[in-house]
Image (cartoon, rainbow, N blue to C red; front, side, top):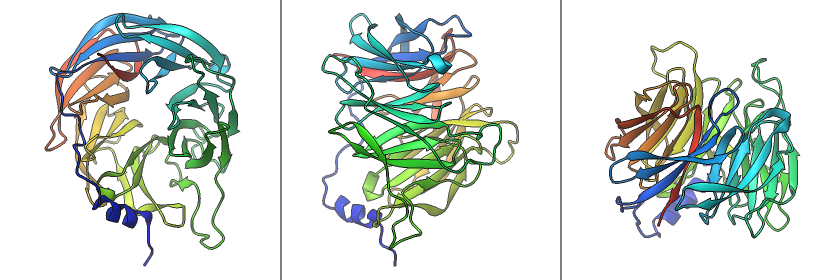
Length: 392
């Protein structure tokens, strides 16, 4: 019998105390920073809203920062700084801001070249000392050190994705890094062009990346990369370690699917048998591009967005294995939900409709995962990402 890390997580989970998976306080207000596209709209950059977790209401706070095409915005774990990917072709940059929570304003600290084209995703290492950048068009990944004052230092790593291209000649003509995220000192990169989630090792002392080794000589059927089926077009990744299982979920933009992978004790990753599940109802056959994927803080539900079908697909997560089962799909009430986010209390899902200029707030049913619309905020030009900041 093949032994996997999942077995050890199951044993470990029996020894851990049971803690609430979702924050219990609901009378909390948050700042929400919304990134937009500015080149073909009236948008000026990043906009701020107040979110009331007791009602699910969004209230506008105005323009937080004027900046070009902030297609991805992240708030540093310390709550003092924010970083934006300025997606502008060969002129792309990464911006660092200080946050004034009282005024809901962002002040530019510095801006550096992205060292690639069209950055589309940012994330932090486990220490909060480095910022990872995925450049879509150029297919490379950067690491920038975060200085003590929040500014970005010169990059410490730049790696080019490489491998066999997928079959879609229009979308997979080159490597396209679409997502980057760290688990410990492992860095995962979803590359849409290569039909792989690439795995890198990260040195937190130097801020450098190295490609993880290939198949183990003793176990040649294992690979350091997560291999997707041909034409999947991996876009984003989500992880789940609830109840002892350890599953990696990958959303396929090109074929509108979620693929599941589990780590093995030998150090590789293998796909779970039969677990590539569609995000679309069987009767839908029109154009669709899958986009975002997120596991609920409780670990009970997985959500993923469809652009074309314009919906949020909901899946239940088996608590013992992490296996998915379709639980429904819900219209986002607009066009092209490029991104959505779950609020920090776990009660609400906020979906941004890029092509209809709106953010829709849904309440999440904790028993079924079903979504019910609470409100819609319109007049937000081309919203494509949002992030939360807890306020005092």
